Length: 167
Image 1: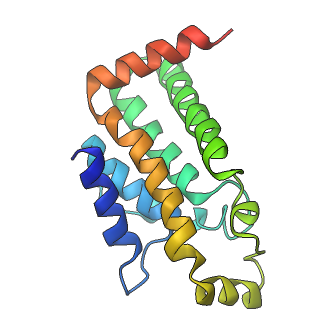
Image 2: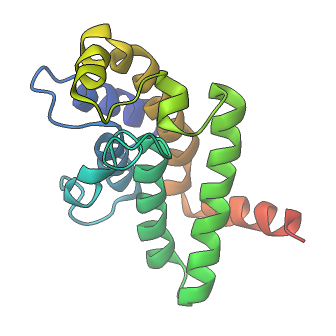
């Protein structure tokens, strides 16, 4: 699955009228599919990450879902566990930096301007359609940035560049 196909798959999942998958779940599923990881259809591990972890307003679900998929990919590609953790952190940190540069923040509450913990604010969020536009762009951004890592050469080159920048 190339970057364009991955972004389209995210749109299809995220905008499905049944509203089954949130930001974290969509990003997690699509990147697992793009990376060729097992059990790609399951979003269970990411269910509570939408809205910045349980609607707390923390790190955007698109980032946390992506971080989980990157961790799975790193585990598969890097034999040493410590090295895999470092690789996953470096890739996720880069995503967070680029995400903040593009969207102005990484925390859900700042990104949507609402406190989703209250029923009234959550309902206002749903009715506003922000999730169909702003949140979708954030999901698409995360997937577009990371889907190319499915290619092992791109993965290796990205890690090489990230490690060179590290002190």
